[in-house]
Image 1 (cartoon, rainbow, N blue to C red):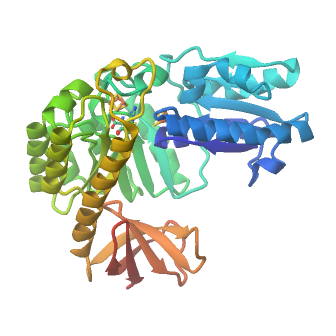
Image 2 (cartoon, rainbow, N blue to C red):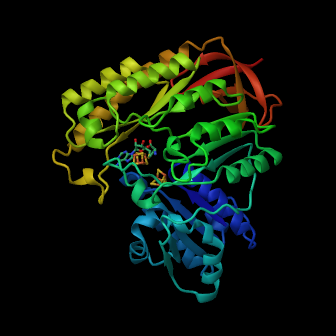
Image 3 (tube, rainbow, N blue to C red):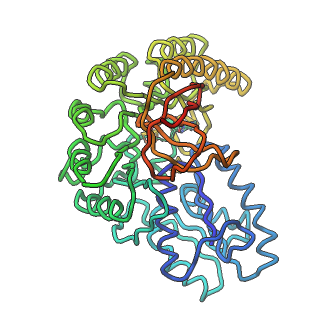
Length: 431
Ligand code: SAH
Ligand code: SF4
Ligand code: F3S
């Protein structure tokens, strides 16, 4: 089998779990789609560009189906949830389409398909119960663990609440057990995942996120603990304290601000003002020394003007994020913002994106340059994609480090001296 994964870490985690389940009925992973007997595309629909990439890939699979009539080809994930049988209408070489609530049923669906030899479309259960009894499959030193599913925030641009359902938190004991098993199997870094981890536990009330994080942090053998994503409106003082007092909780907070003008933030339904965000960042930086803060930004949201955009530039110059992921607003049908007046012209969107990136890149470089000659601990990831002799690793603050490889292994924690800081990576030497 070959699983192709698009989108966010939640999809990466779901793909891992589906691979683990499929391995229990005899499917083993292969390196490429050409030699696979089962191809699964785990999809994202957060922006139109993400969907376009998936349609491109679906097209590429067509000739493989013709060569090998026994090949099973399925689509799952967020775009499958959103489009359902439209996908099969558009591309009849797809055998099955399952939504985000059915990933726990993947083995049954594949078994059924082997028998009935017809299409299966199942997008039910989007708000359904959370499964816990996944076989654990460890092929790495780091692992993503979803602690909750869904989102209740309904930011007006965003499709995620519609394709991932309402917020549902897993039980603390199930999460702890999963982390313990992973650590026993050799995992050294865990990332706890949710669309908004700060609202963890608001449903079952057995534990809030700060408490959960503190509990997980106590697990013996775990070296690094990360989490994402934090929503600025819900990040509590208790959480900041938990991070500060933590043993292995990494000093990195991904805190998407989306925009730097109140008028637009309100239309986005984000639930905070620029000023409130600023206060929050100030508090975080006061309490957690050397913390890195990264963000997401959207340009071209309906109603954006030169003034609101300039406010945003001033805002990011003021906050000084370590890094920002910048996106062009993409109209998602079914979301409120798709119907808002004053949609922004494409050309202007692209110009603004470029400007925003230029400003942020300069800031990232300046921040990273302050790390020159510092000795930082990194978790070794392995060889870089382009060069076998260069290895990559990450600092606790989640910055990518490149270094010349001697005999370090993936999963090692080592110290490097930063020799050449750049905008997106730090080059260093092992000490
Ligand atoms: N739950 C997380 C991430 C959601 S999706 C959060 O709330 O931050 C990841 C990012 O995609 C978002 O932070 C946002 O910046 C971006 N995004 C979401 N919908 C978008 C859209 N319609 N157009 C462009 N970017 C979008
Ligand atoms: Fe989308 Fe907003 Fe939920 Fe994030 S918090 S997933 S941006 S609706
Ligand atoms: Fe994309 Fe779904 Fe994640 S829409 S960003 S894969 S939750």
